[in-house]
Image (cartoon, rainbow, N blue to C red; front, side, top):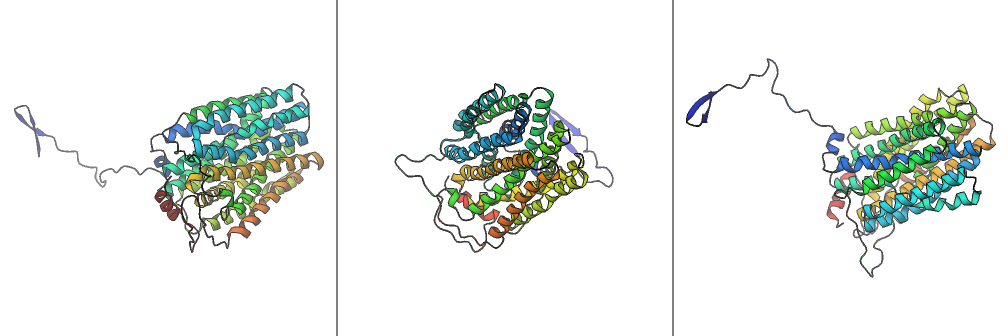
Amino acid sequence: MQFALTGHTLVVLPPDPAPAPGRGPRRPRPRGPYARLFETPGALAFTLPNALARLPMGMFSVSAVLLITTVHGSYALAGAVVAATLGASAAGGPLLARLVDRYGQARVTVPAVLLTGAGQLGLLLCVTGGAPLWAWFCCVPLTAATPNTGGMSRARWAHLYRDAPAARHTANSFEQALDELCFLLGPLLAAGLCTGLAPAAGTLTAVALLVTGGLLFAAQRRTEPPAAPRPAGTARAGRTPLLLPGMPPLLVTFLCTGGVFGSLEVVTIAYADGLGLKGWAGAVLAAQAAGSGAAGLAFGLLPPPGGPVRRRMVRWVGVMAALMTLPLLVAAATGALLPLVPALLIAGMATAPAMVTGMTLLQELTPPARLNEGMSLAVTALLSGIAAGAAAGGWVAEHLPPGAAGYLTPLTAAALAAAVARGAFYSWNPVRKSTAMGPAVAPPEPPSSNSTANARSASPR
């Protein structure tokens, strides 16, 4: 029996209701890893505009191919233009990331999205206005300012959860799934706008999304990693991440993986066009991104597996290469577009785990103060591979008979990625040399997530 004093009166409180027979008191349901990821204040506030700014990255290439082939009827020319714009972004990416590390994300993102939008609009006006080809390529250098919005978002997660390896694993998986979602919705949106509304509508919409999302993302300052300005009169501290042990073969692996993406996009559009179904190319390409995105989300729900991350990456890149045989076999056997949808869906399921483990390895190899630059090098390698793959896919579509032969291009790129990864990392015993963050370290085993987290938490930023 319980009592309570109200004024000058002693009252008897009713007893607590008894729990139902056979049931104990209710316990709060444990929150999943993705729900816990966004418990940090400001996490959702920077993720939403970043996703808005990232969506155009899945639109620009498809919009350019559809625009140029509609106006000028040349896949080779479309592939060359896409390769040039992606190459410019790849060349400018590391410099832009170095500026982000030095001056902060907000100060660099705002002018970057404005310059990129100007370059894309200028190219659009040249293509539709009948300008000479040299004028088209004069607009390309402005696209070198394309910001690595995905890399900046990953840098924020790494800063927020620098002492929580499991949360970083979930964040990397979420970011990869978000990338795939953008490359799922981007081609769909671009194809629908270009074929259903106007050939220029895809590029115009992508520019609007990039500028709006980029400005809103830059406004989220409380989750922004601190800048690491160089003291006046001193040389740039530390070596570039490009020269760190293990980084060159990792970047070559990313380069070949980008070749898979770039060539797959162009040869699928050409394959659909050969069947008279060009307007459905975006939906077919979305199947590959859907498979990768679903696999990425599922991968993030699992705890970080044990063992060296380098060997996990080797295995997943090998699975990606094996599954990339499916589009070739299905296209050769059926000669139809609809059977490609499940083939690309399954082929995409190894892409996200391969990218997640690759990005995790890159974060272990790169000092925190140079993380934006390190991830930008990975994106540069991917964009360079996409550019080369797009150019190769355009050449194949232009010069080889229409049909399944084009899918040899992404299969070859995937096989090269698997060969490089296995040759470089399966038996690799890294020795981490001196970096900007401290003296030389020679670990007997490859770095683990826990050891990296401890090293980062102990290092000055």
